Image (tube, one colour):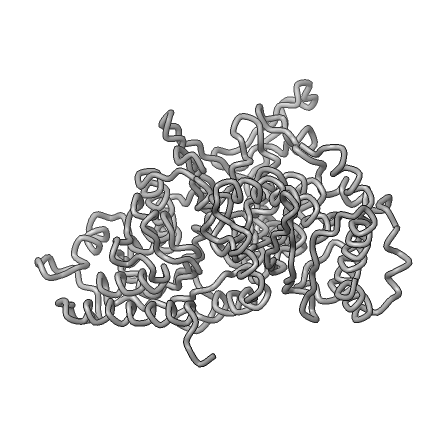
Length: 171
Length: 402
């Protein structure tokens, strides 16, 4: 299910230690720091490997996240807004990453543009509850999804370069 | 800039559609509210057939149903039918939660009608239900319960919005995804409220309902669905929208099971099921009782288990006090070579947990139990350690400026 490259990427993202969600007020700040540390490390790794592909930021209590992700296909960059909430049962349940601009454009998506991660990601998350965080969700959830879906959507003409520029520009 | 955006216009249209729906309903003939349920057998009494349950000796006090508040979380294929059944039964108050809209793709299921497409499910359901039975008080909340802000509100509603402004009597979970089930589970464990979980499989040919009494029966987190996975592919906790199949039949049957057991629980008749499954292909209806998991990862579940244990001990002690006065039977077989244990009919079977918990065929762990997980956590990489002394604000700006 997980290829060698992904395994290597995964190994370089620090695992998280504090198993706490946003409702566990005492421990959540620690968890949030760990999330940030893991994300910083992952983005730095990506930059070093010339594979920088997303930016994220959050509100001050770390319950809402948003940013951009992009995918390069045949030398053209396609950029999308990405957003998600930290669910109350986090980290038992993973964040539901959404690409609102693509809502309704693919069947591999739930309402509101939330990408389908049931097969490729949820079992991995379930086996690593507590240790996986947002960085892992990006690496193992959104990353593979983009790699499969975006070329397909482009080949079907559902997303085009111009439209995409307009979409990300107006956001 | 002053021109309205598409989404604003859409919102505006949605409001007008809702108003239109309300106007249409106003023009339809609607009956007056009925202050007291009557058993009188006349064509105009909507409750005569329900009140007849008393005459038949099934229910002692059917009118009590008007005192109860039931929350239906998720008013899709199962939840909407559930809400309609309860409405027709004359439930006191219904509280509906859903953040989805009615779509034409829902029309293979019951309840919603094509002209309601585009309306929020809770709004559309509220209008229809109020028209069916104006005696039922209906509250509708159009939001996603799994986000932090909404969850607090959700918990508040469950604990304060009954007809007497206290905790509601029962919650029926009719959602189609793991996250929302987990949210309902957490809320009910924390508030110590009884609830029913329900579900229909992605391939539309099986379903189940499960009664969860925090601390007494297994909660949803006690047995994560991924653990019970060999004969049935439980990767199937997928949601509507991504090509999940659905049948009005299976959903109607599950809703029927759900409301039947809700009525038995509320009106105190018959035996309330702990778990009832439905396999449509084989017409197989398994039932079982699930004990809570002592290592459940929800601390509130563990707390409720301890409370239940204390209550049970107290109850048994009182029972023993009564029994002790009777003659104690002599033990006939002091050495019990084959470990045979006797138990009363209806009592729980002897504790099997000292042996393998998963001996039942077809059940195996898909990933380590939570205890093992915790043990491994100490070995986890400590790479992020050095960064943990940095204030959060600095980390936030660092990520932003990368």
